[in-house]
Image (cartoon, rainbow, N blue to C red):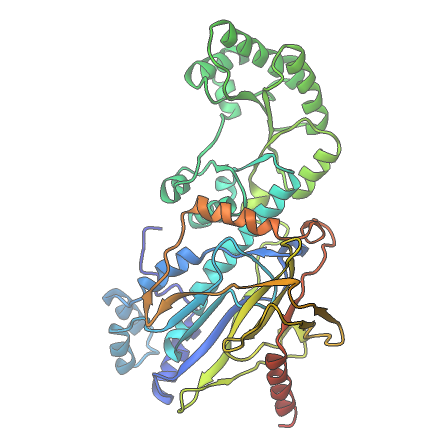
Length: 484
């Protein structure tokens, strides 16, 4: 995890293709690649872009060490001339991206790389690895937080994550998606995010009795006293002993600033309602009732619907692994090649699957908001040189079903360009915000979605349209390819 040079974090075919370009093409031929995804994870209505800060760190440190060259030479498939070239390799191109925490939709580029072909090819795998993982977990976290309807969600998944990196960067992404804290101390140190936690059943079991365990814990952490009450019997033992400790704290004049119980097993709806009544009757109506135990957005929503008296949730396995949808599905496709006159020639990939046909050319994205509500109306993918006037009518249509059209009246909508320059000429020109600032930005982004799009089941689809100019170019390329 301490390795800063991730240059060999790549698939072998990236390097073999690079050697092919080295031997057969102009090394300085400039191309455009787009990193995008085709369908929303978890059958949802949106995704959250995340991972850009780690992409920046990767590109900044992109170089081949002597040990890297020695290892590649040992494979016996790379020429000495190519390996000598790699010794001085560095990224000199441009990168544009959608900022972390932004709500995004299928088919729109999250990252655009404009660089000499060998450089643009090499960065494919690492960019996808980083962006796919963090965008997936940030999206999952946003769904879990939505189900909780404003209750705090704590990320508790480190021990179930697929390795240390997935645990640390998954927790980072979960914070971006809306969690209020993480149990992951290393994530807290690296990214300055709140760390939270209670205690385990082993703490209770290591003492002679439950009351002594609770009392000892409360004496040490009076301002963060959340007691795990289900080690022996939740309602007959755990909650009564917790109430006894809280009563003694109050009698001793210890402020009960943040205190309560945690449930980790059993019927959470039933137990929380019973525990709530017991706490209220004892004079502790502000005591927190938190819950854990293999929670996800659907179980949380169900518990809320059942009237569970839970106001704080610890979510682990299902969020840190996105258990029901374990991959994001992002891809990285060639979109254009620069000709000898310095103009980009659009390129397109065909497929029998409509959703796999790529959008060609040097593109950017405009988000279209309804002026009256500030909600997202649609996204528009267009060529970078296209200009639009918000005072003029705009015709939108689905590129896959172009007969579906919507006409926006001039003055009824607001445009915002999403992609920002990240690298120019190989130099980073973007400063990544702190994680908690990205989180705050993400919350504002989520507020621009209609409730119909945020719902967990069968969400409303936000359309990602093509400009007329881009659509015409795509159709021309399709016709040309079909004639070959």
